[in-house]
Image (cartoon, rainbow, N blue to C red; front, side, top):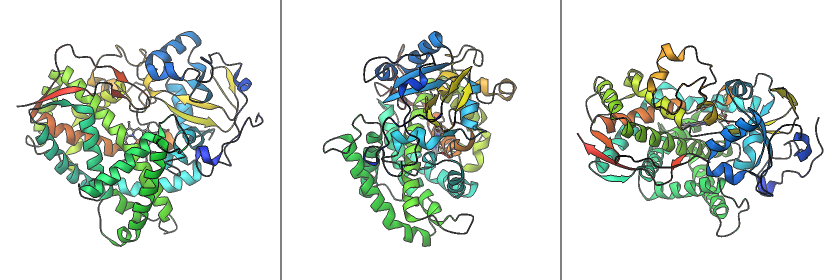
Amino acid sequence: MNAPAKFNWSEGRFGPDTAHWLPRNPDAALDHIPGEDGMPVIGNTLEQLRDYPSFTRRMVGKYGRVYRNNSFGGRSVALHGPEANELVMFDREKIFSSEQGWGPVLNLLFPRGLMLMDFEKHRADRKVLSVAFKPEPMRHYADSLNEGIRDRVAAWSGKTFQFYPAIKELTLDLAATSFLGIPWGPEADKVNKAFVDMVQASIGVVRRPLPFTAMGRGVKGRAYLVDYFGKMVPERRDGAGEDIFSQICRARDDDGEYLTTGAIVDHMNFLMMAAHDTITSSITTMVYQLAKHPEWQDRLREEMLSVAPAGEGVGHNGLGELELTEWAFKESLRLVPPVPSFPRRALKDFEYGGYRIPAGTSVGVSPAFTHMMEEHWPEPEKFDPMRFAPEQARERHKYAWVPFGGGAHMCLGLHFAYMQAKIFFHHVVTTHRIVVRDGYAPEWQMLPIPRPKDGLTVTFEPL
Ligand code: HEM
């Protein structure tokens, strides 16, 4: 069933190339699915933003694991649990569009990024971009991450500071070198500002680029970066740079062709966006969990020192040996997944949980909910990295732990994320104790990307 258009997706509001998106369904198309519409106009948006985990728990408790929601501009269907994750993420039958799911949020500022492509086109571009994440380039990024992190951790030593803004700034600075191949300084600052404006705009309430709005600044930021990256493509193609941008400029598709300048620019913008707040959020969660569990700092320190001396960080070759560190990072991603839920749009009618769900429906899955399901994660609130030891992980549903998604759109940068986290914690934990004051329990804002509301006050006590 393809319902008539209520209104079409306008280019001004949703960015370029939206003419092929399915028209929106009339609200009545989902009347048969239990759920609620919430307040007039805003629906459940505020309740969801205020406390996303409680909202989902309440809805699942009342309506079950398939429910109708109304937020962020319209009705959608939420599907919960590992089986739902597998259906949507693995998408055996090519039912779900990532482009049309993420599009209303991202297409205006980050068009033609990988998550804004589907099926064959997506596969072809993803294959080209994958060259930047092969072991040889990763080795170079590891070197530049080690250098940048070492200096910054030294600057934080002995201080009590707000960790979240500090790691956000460090992650941006590290991206300048490992993603873009530009040194820290005024040029990198300008790029960072343009980029931050774009990200802010993509989650802003006002969706039109009016003066003095986040969207206005975001669109200006995008114009700056398009021009900046675009001009550099020929020189990067001819050079021998080891950064991600240079790798992508030199990458060729199956026909031996380079990506166009426009495609390179769009992919770079998207990659930086996909990497930035997610790494920031996950490292912040792990810092907090380690501060609350000093015994885990001791266990990780012992493992880390067996791989490389204190304060030296760890090169690409040593990363695989940091097993406990990896489990602690995975457990942090379980407790607070940086992408708590994500959208798709059904391109065909499908059935799930006893309901027929029509083509055109916006569909959401929720790593945050799945990661707290007691039947898969006993004592789900407890920080226990041993859950990821092979003997415990073996029997678990493959889609019970999905911080990086799954299937064709599974995070392309997940090894980069593990690498940055391991290098970061090697520098910090081998030289410092991470401390928070007794009884400290900051509140987290879960959407759009989790962060501690107060910035997370920590002390890095030198050992
Ligand atoms: C802890 C850090 C990270 C988390 C939790 C994370 C999470 C995710 C998730 C959930 C998706 C899939 C979304 C969907 O299916 O709709 C995704 C996709 C993606 N991520 Fe990450 N990400 C992280 C770090 C990174 C980094 C460091 C990079 C780049 C260096 C990156 C690049 C990408 C790209 C390009 C995609 C789109 C893949 C595609 O559509 O084929 N991510 N990420």
